[in-house]
Structure formats: C-alpha cells, structure tokens
Image 1 (tube, rainbow, N blue to C red):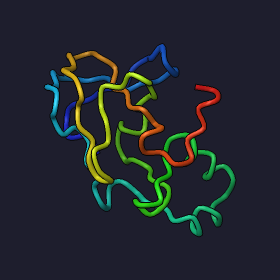
Image 2 (cartoon, one colour):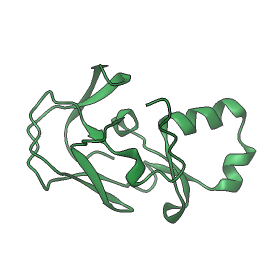
Image 3 (cartoon, rainbow, N blue to C red):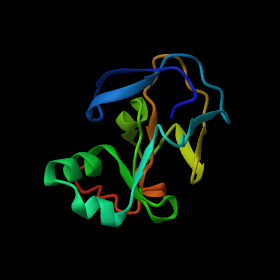
Image 4 (cartoon, helix red, strand yellow):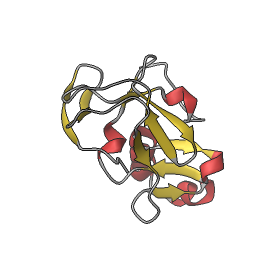
Length: 124
C-alpha cells in the first residue's frame, strides 16, 4: 500500500498510471506491504483460479517467491508503470523507497525486473 498520496491519470507509458499527489523526498518510504489489504496468492492457489483472474493477476500483480507467490496491491500501487529509470525501488520484500525527489504530478515508476521474478518485458 502506498504511504504517500497518489492519484490515477493518463500515462504516456502504458495508458493509466499513478502520479504523486504530494512532493516526495528521496529516501522516503512510499510503499509497504499491508497484510489483509495487499494480497498474496500461492502458486497452487493461482493454478485453481479462472483464466480471466489469472490474466488480471499477471497484468496488475507481480510474482516473488520470497513474498509467497503472486502479489496484488489493493490500492493505486497496481498502476505503477515500469521504467528502466524508476523513481522508486523495492529495498526488501515489504518496502519500497523513493530513489529521487519527486514533485506533485510526476509519474510514479519502478523497475519491474528488480522484484518481479516472472516479469516479461518484451512488450514494455
């Protein structure tokens, strides 16, 4: 769950994106896994889901074995777009920080390859 104010909007990166709704200083904790709000789905649970639900998880979630499988954020974090020059970075399995100062209105991005072990960036 984001620990900072955000809003959704049109993004040149991938249609919909999430944007800072306040100034964020470099080093600020901006995302933290919140049990009961963010959801983790094991490989076995994933396999039992309908194909449409699996597709949703693959698009809006990410996979990390150390976190227990597929993770789906319960807030705007699921709209964070990929960038090879991101503004935030996961520092452990439950926290992400801002790695640069970010102004209100700036797009929030993260490098999926750092944390998503099933990331397929062929189309990104």
